[in-house]
Length: 251
Image (cartoon, rainbow, N blue to C red; front, side):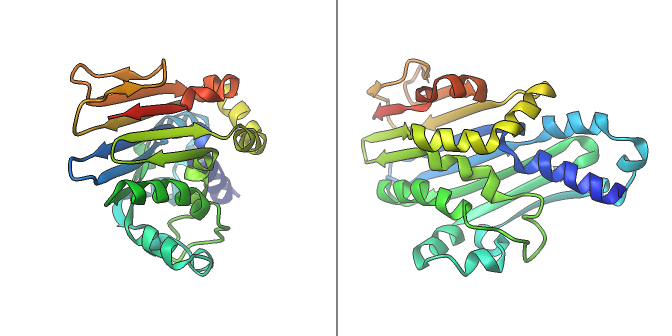
């Protein structure tokens, strides 16, 4: 029972976005390409749960797990997911990397998904399609990796946004109907995180190769050289006002 309990606890901590510090990072380059990175730091949640565990459970082999690796996202997906993917979605996943850095005893757990888009249109396609890919049913994993690091749960929330990306503009608008549906599915998780005093910060960082001309979001902070836009919020704020994540940038 102890082994089952530790696995369940860790899966809850690692697969639910409300227990995660989330950072989206976009690095736009002069040649039109863009690196987009979803970074999920679950270390705080693990530290909280660590304090709740008995010494006997913390001494199990499951809690001694440690991993530091980078793999192709497609190769990490289970066969059941791969079989549902279109040719375009396969290429998208093959062009993305999944990085895992975990040491439970040290309260370290970080997962990131990275993709390099070769053009604005490819970036827009990636942002719109990754959420669909994440929502495919994932039962098991070829290598056991996604049983704990479930990409489906980590980026499913991105389905709430609509994007428009060109050579001179980046627009993201939240779909309130989808966001409310997402909240209904995860409301118990948010309540649990709040009860455990786990904060839910959410940050978007956009780096540009040339100065930004215009920003349509009052919460967004522009750097002194006008090449970086940072938007910080948290789930409590988003629940009250989903429009906080709407942003339009001319550059």
